[in-house]
Image 1 (cartoon, rainbow, N blue to C red):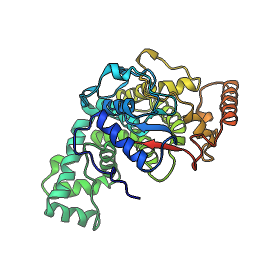
Image 2: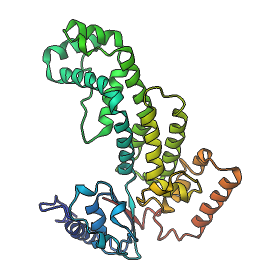
Image 3: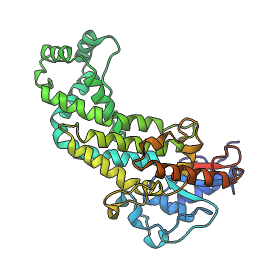
Image 4: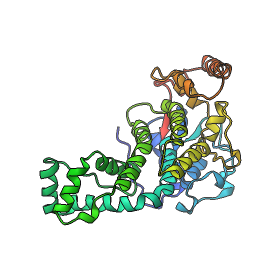
Length: 342
């Protein structure tokens, strides 16, 4: 079946229009009363769409819970303060929220990284735009070798570009640049160290991004283990970084703020609760899905900072809820229920 509703929106992407199209697709596929969670990003038009979309409980949401409020102009605070219903719940897109964490960290790195980044960008442009330089580059590093170009809308493209540079033989690269009259683009020892450190810092975030972008597999079960793992990594990095301490601090702050209520659900007290961002990570579905996934089960509890008694109590609480849940109507029943991702 190929419903006519599945097509790009030709008109303005307002919350009303998105809700109408979504409702049409759900009706065409006969998914009414089968959707228990709707996953969206945090843009205001998506939140407003959940107001108009029937059967989705958004709770008492306000404009303060929206990322990039100015990105869309159809937001009405009055609309978002209305409760939606009882048959479904909106939860935030973890991957989108993770990108916002990374964006905050990269902004803190911009000053120290800028000189090296400028050189890397110019070298990359030469590889892609100059046939003479490309030929010399392939002669030095091998046929078909290149440096990935960055994309402003995908942070991990910048990461892969920097990683490609740090993985190269720096002596060969310097020889190539000098022989092609681009000696000014040779990275200094300090610049290389700056790039290498940010690549190491961002590597777990790149892995998490790849892990949570699956289209054909369930990814909600990776949320809790990933957040715990990233937090532990960043806390360890604080004593190791030399050039990007501000970035690591900001990444850790962003993780705490954006996933504050997930930590709260897991009995972990965090500083600065006043700055917490309520982005719909306060549902038990995250911890329950991790516990039910054999890849993770309760292994992520080893990263929990609490005592063994706290961990045991948390395990019991999650297991008790799992036993009581009717999985014929549960989100984890892959045959009868659907998590709708937008």
